[in-house]
Image (cartoon, rainbow, N blue to C red):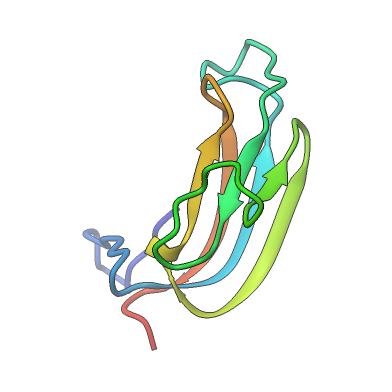
Length: 101
């Protein structure tokens, strides 16, 4: 759900300007189709300019894992996730600051 100001029906997410305040990720345990079980890991990187790749700097979510974190004015484009293989149905919940601070 991406809400704008009252009466604003055109709220737009801008990864270069909008800030991330809180993020929750849940590895559903399923592939992207939502029905095929997944044993693949998900890699998360929160360092600006580094893509998730399964390296030592990444956090790892196994099927069924949940990760959450609170951020201080982090740009949305600093977050990167990558599946070890195939696709993963990932549930994402976030609190965003529209336009940054």
